Image 1 (tube, rainbow, N blue to C red):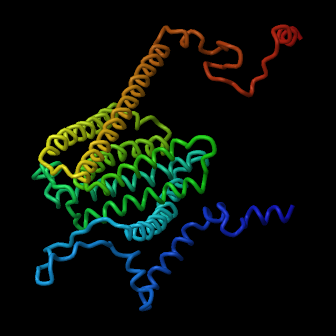
Image 2 (cartoon, rainbow, N blue to C red; image 1 turned 180 degrees about the horizontal axis):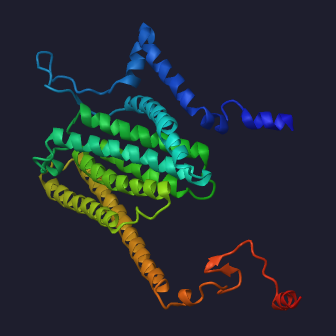
Image 3 (cartoon, helix red, strand yellow; image 1 turned 180 degrees about the vertical axis):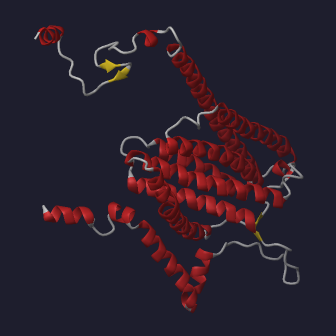
Amino acid sequence: MASRKRSARNPPLLSPEFVLQNHADLAACAGMVCVLGLLFEGTAEASIAFLTLQHRVPAAGPEARAPPRPLYRYGARDLATVSFYALVAVLARATLQEYVLDPAARRLRLPRARQGRFGEAGQLGAFCALSCAWGAWALAAEGCVSEPGRLWRAPPGLPMTFRVKLFYVAQLAYWCRAGAELLVRRPPRDAPPPRLVYIGLHLFHVAAAYLLYLHHLGLLLLTVHYGVELLSHLRDLLALGDGARRGELPLWAAAAIAGRLGTLAVSVLTACFQLAGGRARPRDGGDVDVLAAEVAVLASSCTIQAYVTWNLCSVQLRRWTGDDDHAALRAPGGRRRRTKGRASRRGTENGVAAAHRLDFPARGRRRLHSE
């Protein structure tokens, strides 16, 4: 028995349980190795590939001036940068969980069953808030707010600025970390869980916008999407915090539906403008493939947003009709009013299920009353 307890407390080295228990410490050690590599001449170049953004656009010639702000493209060395920032995301998540969400859950005296959902909603809410603010700032700095035509007039293969590339690298790092953690925690056996599908859809669309140079459009769609997701996670936090149904307000439903419809409208309009502008492009095989891929990604975004909007409308309609039914049952003069104070059905008292009550047969109850 003692050996079993030790094995449960100290899992085997590099096992999934060991990685989950010590993932923040492992990420900190790996990050320190990357940083310490800058101190040595032989490993400095490799460490720089992990720490800084790569594939900067060089000047046109030796006498040409460098651009006023650095421009970047994507490449294979971005995988190293994404992996390092995934370690940063692990550390940020562990810090937020330990110093903010866990004390809040203890202060609210949440049961153990709700603590996991409260932590997950808090983590995603913080990420959505940061991404929404970051995306809005990048859109304003890129001039997309004052000139919306940049969404579809940008030529194919336009390089990225520093702020835009850092935004996409951070997004890819976060969702790669989330997918890896979920696979280590609960590997899919027969069918992937809904959480894995949720992470995969985010990772697919962020990577498609990054690789197809749909940078400004991706910024706009992600900003609106994260704004709607932030409202959803705030509703979950309120519902889990006080146990009331404050989050299920029509205002949240209207904002969520408006955000989804706005994302759908922007995707459709951009896809139409991309098709219309594709006639002016040269008929190379590469350009035609890029145009087809862009339209395919936008069509995928439209399909997902339409599906989510339909589900959201259906859930809200069922919830509102269900609330009307409950209100009719609770109205004065109803059945629930007349049966107050006595058992309306076997195993219930005052309309509430009594799991601790013993339901004897009818004869048994008569004998007990007669005695």
